[in-house]
Image (cartoon, rainbow, N blue to C red; front, side, top):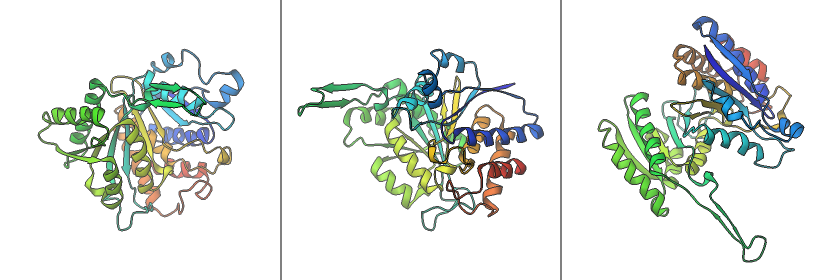
Length: 349
């Protein structure tokens, strides 16, 4: 029995999660997939009612599940960043979800702003370190609020954290296809100490993978090549901050936020899957949001837990619907109704 924790979250989150669960129900029947859902009301609305985003023992509750399915985070009436920290960051750090996995994949029938590029050229994986860098919150202020104010935000990299994410990337390259190439994206010409560590660990771990091609690119150059020659990439491994930035660029070249899904992975514990878009409060409750990214996140969840037949059926259904030409615009407010897109994909599985 697959046990899934469901956190619909804020804004459009409940609507898009509803469609992901609809597709899960549709694919479970032909694949004999048994699952159990437990829903949590964590997020901005809970904070406004109770003063807490989630209960104090929330992380302990999540550890009992095989996977976590998250809708969207962010509420306009809650202080900026509060919900994000107490949900996204606390879960990622507390459950040691040290891999942020982002497939950059252009589906057939989806428009890309990159001229003369199609699904054959835009199909790579970004493996982003997820629990270190500047996100650990090390730093502070001196002379706060004065003309002499100093603010520091320290990037933290550990040997353990660097080695395990690089090793994960090499394993992912071996499993993905026959190309088997890993590109390290850093800024070691400027960020001398931490990225020197990344360079050394990449070289050392790489020796264990003689069958995998190794490449390196500075992050600014990588942004250029993602636009000009996305086919050069197979698996990218990079730091938390740079991964955060380049995966949004990746979302744009694969057709936009509405089709981009992500996984926060702990290979030995509970992992969390979500669309990369925000809560889009202006569309909340209007049945106007595009749920494809959230449905694709369900595909990633099932693939991660080993329900490969169900996962493949969902991805094939997404491809079939997008390639059919029935959805002319993927933008929120311009795409077909949220529930209608969910119905289309559920019928296609």
